[in-house]
Amino acid sequence: MNLEIIKAIDALLETPQRIVIIPHKNPDGDAIGSTLALWHYLNNLGQQAKVVVPNDFPKFLKWLPLSELIINFEKDTESAKELINEATVIFTLDFNHLGRIGQLQPLLEEASATFVMIDHHQEPSDYAQIMYSDVSMSSTCEMVYNVIEAHKGINHITPEIAICLYTGIMTDTGSFKYSSTSSRTHTVAANLIEKGANNTLAHSMVYDTNTPSRLHLLGCALKNMVILEEFRTAYITLSQEELDKNNFKKGDTEGFVNYGLTLEGIIFAVIFIENKDEGIIKISFRSEGDFSVNEFARAHFNGGGHNNASGGRSEMSLTETTNYFTSLLPSYKDQLKK
Image (cartoon, rainbow, N blue to C red):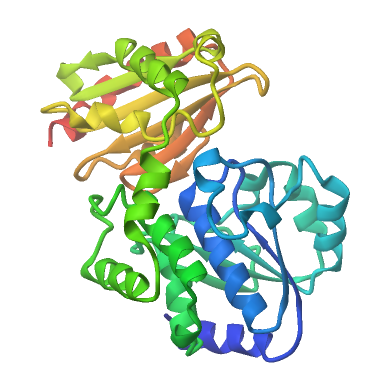
């Protein structure tokens, strides 16, 4: 970490603050793990902190310690507004553009608090006064660990903090298999286990709590998979009708996109999910090697993220979106051959 960032965060925490910690919309394991861990840490230091999420998060993360105290903006709008308006410091975790927080964006744009960004995605915007941005990091949870370490707070990592950070690192590294996983990542994970993180519990609660409807939905997704060998690409579609038929719940499609990359010779995998409530097609992109899905998503689908994991959206129909997607592939054929 940059010494100036450490000093700036230390200076903020030297005095009592009213702190709000916010992850991105549709928060995943890294977002919830990092915000909860930071919340535990700051409150243990005597700070007054709250976590506000733009909307609900998956059931498979609701076992994390004191996750029930997270304030959901959609369900408790007035409390969330009051906290944000009164905040002196706002930590934004696991996103780097206010467009990623949905209905919370206007509130944060008007907030008078000091903003601290902790994030590992590419091309950060400049809304925060203090920015800890590092695209080489495996996860925001690993970055929060670095903040605690720099704050000389390692001895203050409780089992609750440890399990939150471990869960976020585990999920954002695909159980430590993605290329962003470094030797440092493994060292941090080992330290968290020593601090009380039950790694077996984390894996079980995240990956071994399937419902029959989720497995049926997975079967539907795999049946819908289209393989384009010429472009070393595979994509999955799920319509709103298919989601409804299989009793879709938030988080049910987590990880589905990765199945395309398990096919021999495939280096580009995509899932297109219809969301009629929002009037969009939600898209997840994954790749192996040097093909940048971040650049692809930014160029064509109003998205972005990491080189090998990114998201996007389309306001066309599901069929129009997949047709447009396949029409783009010939332009990338040389890159996809590598």
